[in-house]
Length: 302
Image (tube, rainbow, N blue to C red; front, side, top):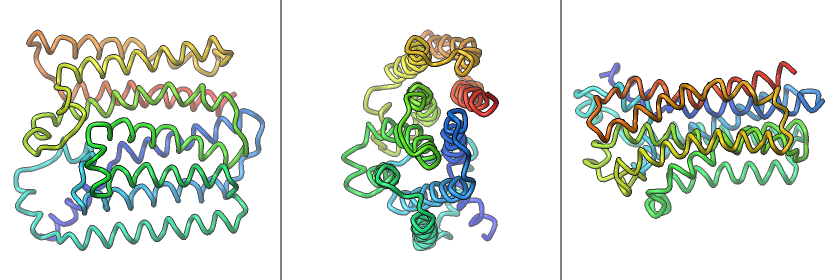
């Protein structure tokens, strides 16, 4: 029973979402460093800790309310039949207490940021938006009304706010390179979430989750996935036209062959091609995280 409890608690953690936050926080800090700002590592550590604690708090809170929130890649791929029976040993109050602990730690972290003088109007707005993004995804009533577009809100919250928060903590004001670097990543992340939805499509229908794929169907979902991938690379190309240095973003296009292969493979499903979910999921992770790594590396190394 104790083993079941540990495993079930692990399933409330979304490792892909946590990795997204960590990677993009590094990206935002790297952009500030590239622009000549000396990194304040106290702000860096307090900022990333605050974001992770807040995110973990809302993960557990959403699962406590059983809101239509993404159940996570870990849960979808590794769920075992006996886990449903084991849920009876994990009272909902435990999930609520864990959520409250993380949210309390996040509140304490925001106070520390204030004492350090890191919180100005821009930082306060970004922190507020980060909270609101998760609130609309997990709070009962609000989250149900937003079912079907939660994937879009998730991508906007996870992709735009962490690097912007990290950048403003260090640089203090907006710079166009921030927008050029992070906006193309939004459709690539949306494509990743849609892939997760495709993997769990039959379960989402059975559980009556009103995800975007349940609303539009899997065929339109594949089309939206492929369109999102193309949109991401097109936005990187547009950024080049507006003066984003090719030495910073050129390596991103090394991912394009993988993206094209994924798009082609999914397009074959409608013609009855074999379904290889593990391969598709791995390719989707590469298509999102490899550009994030390459552009982050470019900013930190130049």
